Length: 325
Image (tube, rainbow, N blue to C red; front, side, top):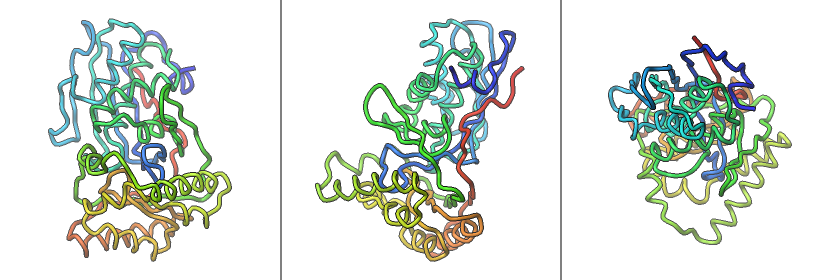
């Protein structure tokens, strides 16, 4: 059953579908390219309309300050829509509107959210025939262009919701894991940008065996911690021995910001994806509000930049249809 079917398949007479896809925190410490957690907000919206002609006949983008490409061959949402058309062997004509709500180069999965929203909207417009695995594959066509890498740790939670483990290899397999009761995520997004592609290049292709052992242990421990709701184990295992040490220098003030979150009551904290956003996992909203304020203050003191704050529970629903016409 396709996602559109699960949320209410639109009738055949539908001419337009609007879809929201949420931002996500990826990696969560040790889960480089395999862990992601959907947030309640912010998110991107994509509208796909039936239009005369064949294929993508128009593409507009708002909310991006004119920075997101409007060439369908370079736009994450449009590439995902084309992936749906190709998979369904459809020659339908469509017009696409992308409304960006996720800051660019923020480490919150903006290109993935646009791609997911585009895939879900296009599929719903054409009858909702694709299942989640197929929708994810279509979204990844756009995500590859947006991030320069073939990984689904943002797209999978944006599509399916919740905390998701993405298994490496093909076919793509995503596994939803439970979220500990009472967990609230605080995110500080400073007025900085880190391009995902550049942040991946600095990692290289090899790691020391000792770092691998720490990473594998922490990743396995974090899965167990989420299943058990074990906050002590979460605190121990949200540690990145591979990517974060190499990327920390890309985010001025990162280490003091992370320490500030922990001292303010967060259980664990780290870079969201490649940054510059920093996430904190907290027990309850009060702790999250305290951690968020501490992170924003630390970014101002250490880097001289203001931060936008997000305080969110896990978004269990993921992408959803907002409107059909």
